[in-house]
Amino acid sequence: MESENKKSAVSDVGAWAMNIISSVGIIMANKQLMSANGYAFGFATTLTGFHFTVTALVGLVSNATGLSVSKHVPMWELLWFSVVANVSITGMNLSLMLNSVGFYQISKLSMIPVVCIMEWVLHSKQYSKEVKLSVLVVVIGVGVCTVTDVKVNAKGFVCACLAVLSTSLQQITIGSLQKKYSIGSFELLSRTAPIQAVSLLILGPFIDYYLNGKFITNYKLSSGAILFIILSCSLAVFCNVSQYLCIGRFSATSFQVLGHMKTVCVLTLGWLLFDSELTFKNIMGMFIAVLGMIVYSWAVEAEKRLNSKTTSHTKNSLTEEEIRLLKEGVESMPLKDLELAESKV
Image 1 (cartoon, rainbow, N blue to C red):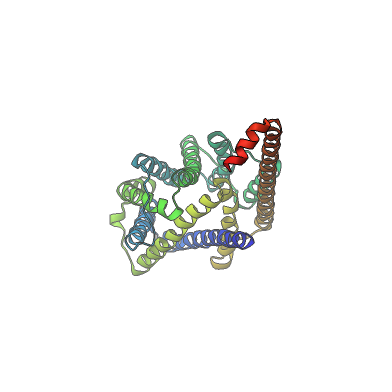
Image 2: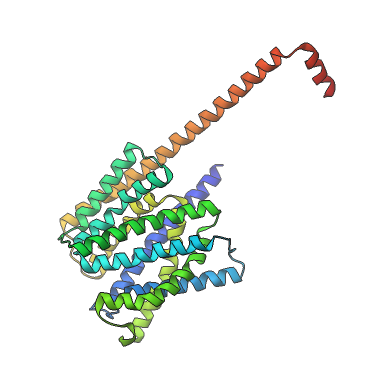
């Protein structure tokens, strides 16, 4: 039992490590690819379509070689999930374009309480006071280190709300689909990726044209840009797989809370690699955020232990009750019936 728990803990750490490393890596690669000082590839939605295309191809090869097994999920649920996921991607891009960076960060932070409320409404999930407090600490910490200027307009506000709601719903749906159909994270991803890839490759260029006024067909590819697109797509496979893994193993709330470790890593690496400014306010915010994540991890584990003890106590109580009823039944049973039972044995 202990060895199984250790293996599970190692797998959990591995899933989180893969998600953080691949997510931070893809942010750094995309920063070089899309920034004006890099290769100025300003087609984020189409790039996401490339990501899912490569992910779908990996899933196809995995199924063909027998490394994974394709399980049945109704097409309407796959289409519904893909629509929500694509609205999330588009909404985030539009929110970043129409709002200030500060408001964009606030909208991303609001996903934590939104996910909590959605899980409570959809799945009747309850949270302890310690978990709620730690979530608040994380939100404050990340807010302190990332939020600067806050400007908002009507269109930007609507896009931000749409992005937050769809992203939160997408992450909750990942976990519920895995449980509902007993399907693994990679198997589910390999079913949804082709639909997202096709839809984003068709709609992506038009969305990007609306965002930056340029068509991808007018972009002049260089060998450096191609290299970073390939790197971005490769990292996206690990990022997508680890996202499904983490949500399947934990919950959408845990993914949001502990996922802000990526924000801390991005700020630190930006300072180390790109000479980004790192102020005392940033450092204090990161410290508060990490403290909140530690408290959150402790609170979730404490909640799990309490639930397991309660379940164990309930099972023991039921067993004792059953034994008592059985004894009463035997004592009250007529002697003739007891003799018949013995003779049958």
